[in-house]
Length: 290
Image (cartoon, rainbow, N blue to C red; front, top):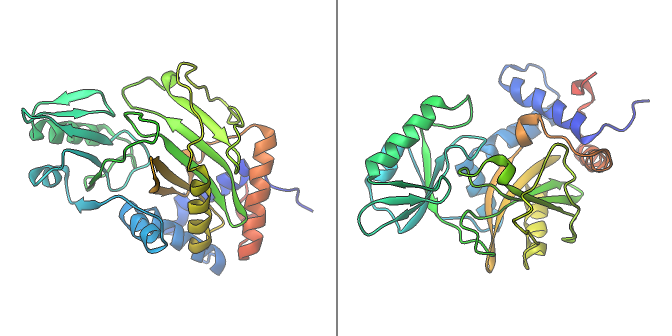
């Protein structure tokens, strides 16, 4: 009898399936159905649409074929430019227009003198980005004000399963800061701090994080979206604005499949995931690492 797989083992199985899905043949129907759903809502614009259709608030946004097209028209006072497809914050710009026509980016702590300068910098980053980090097509969307007033809004990454959302990772990670200056906290489903339960992760002690007042709404939004999506696991990325929860994106393969938790929580998340797979009649056993 096979022992209970850990979260890391199941994530490696999910990653192998994810990377080989387009070439896979004869996948069991439940696995195929799940991965078709995962692939669909992983696309940022389709994820926004799915979340909105299921009652979770999203930002106003528009998709453009290129950053040049996005920057050519009307621009609000504060806005975000991000890749339509991508798995990091490398190509995300949180921009504020200045009276002299320049733009200040809170994410990169940099001033761009003109629209063309923003375009040029994005294209430079695109040319240097790894596969799947950035795309030529972009989304222009409204800027979300953080409930604690952080210049770069805190990310809330909720680990969602059919049986609930047991862990939330809170992150402050402006790209202009080195990673050792980023700040993290982890919470259980009731908003109680868990400490740094991921392996090889540190947090800037100068930045104090705490659960937002609308933490319960984070859990409720994640649980609702996971139930609606009918997938066994999804990290649901959300923002906590002063009086509302805003959908960010779906992340089917966190940290490109390289994410590990300390043993206690590796087992806990693994149990939630295994139970979720059983609920949906999905079997990952053939794809688990040997």
